[in-house]
Length: 265
Image: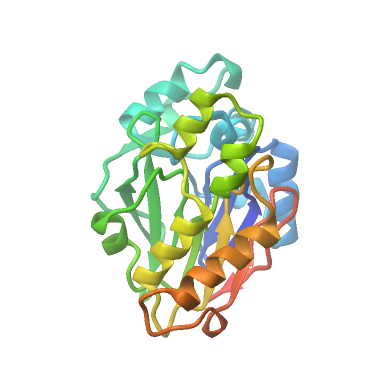
């Protein structure tokens, strides 16, 4: 099983998850050209993709979806509310609405030999979800665009082999930055985005000996730095109420303009 971030950030997101025989994308929020380049780097093309899992309808998660679906006729999975928003989005152009496949939070479904487990997140979108994907006893997850976390989120992220987790902003940078007040409130609210500190606190609740790789993703371009996110999360883990230190784990930041290394589990 493999996972790689093709792009992750406030300007666009696309994550690959796959087995030897089944290949999925989580979101398609970058150009079709960049998606193709990313797939090519791991030995694949758009023709190999078996499904696109959409977390929610915001443009940084769907902007490349129209071109991708028209060219390759790939099934698109998302909650019914998310798919309704996608179908109504004129910016995507015309594509086969028959490719839209509704899913329900907490109801598993299969794509090839991969079991997909959507679960609810709190964000200012139409019924958004995160995804856990399993192949045999191996499992990975992509969890971004969360205003906060609770026991439900913790339960769905237990026992993972690898995880891409939102570490969107530094609270002090956001509060002192140029964003208008209403936007700061949105980001900091329960339906906004996960801060660096909260990403570290969430990790403290799910760390275990077999968690092989952690990617910090969906960083804000204006309110975060890669090194700041990395160091803040490490500090939260090391100082947190858990038996681990940050040095016990392989942690990296997923770039907005570059691919991550390929995680193989």
